[in-house]
View 1 (cartoon, rainbow, N blue to C red):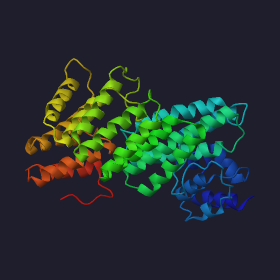
View 2: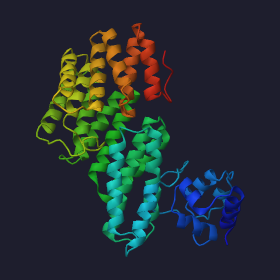
View 3: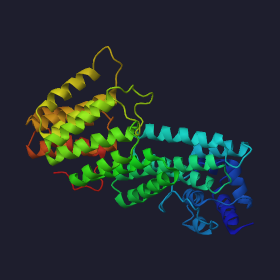
View 4: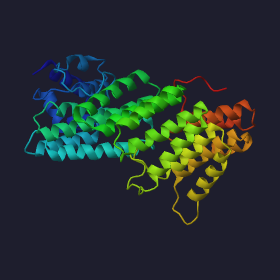
Length: 404
């Protein structure tokens, strides 16, 4: 029996925990816990970390975990890894039931999981989503060491590229820029190895968005253009990068370039159908174009922004349509931004307060919300303090200067 197995057995006995109970706590497959306790299996670094935490071992189990040679395609940068998720344990069972060491069924389920995570992005806390993404990254990294066909290997690398990109996006939301940069580098490398131009373009678009929120508008415009140069012209990254370029030009006060970018977005979007999963973070949803127009024109100081934002909100809340609460919250955010640009700060505060309290804003929306909070606070609007408090509760403000 290995030192790890002996210590795990001792800790479980000392705490009165059985295999199934500990497996539920991690979570993990009970059979795997049994094999770890008997020394028939060795833990991954992630699982050793999770067991150490659940058993309050003070780092003992983590230190006793057998060293594992690093994969040639190590996907996740070092850091505080999360416990293995339930769905990963289920995937492992599927893999074990297949004839090959990985199998196309496992890869297909991972591809579907990537879509589910990208769909979940707007609706769950960033830290929770990051934990789930990390779990999948660790699992994909282990599968890359297994025997696979060339097609399966490439598909796994593509999955790893999307997961690394989503991890970077979530880390940017959490203002953990160094970790985000590491994941972006990984995603870019995997895009290069697999020849996946869409992932490569999204990596650049994500950098442009990060620069835009940081106030480096000139570089944001340049990198948005670079993303357009490499993106497939029929893909979502090309449209999103074009829209991002327009936003950067608006922040720079260049009306001609801004309107040119908006015109290109309209031409690209107008023939597109609504996707079957419109909340997917990496699939452009045509109605989003109107949100970008309202925001961009507000930043430009164009008086047309207010009218467009009001029209968008009215269309979303038409009584004959099914409710779209997140869309309505975003439309209110755009309207509030346009109202601040028009000098109507009292109305902006009320509209923004309703958006922030809706519970439908995602981390990616926080920058616009913060702009409105600061604008109404600067004008001394009576509702400014209430709006600032609601913003802190809904969006957090980690890593940013304190609000007034």
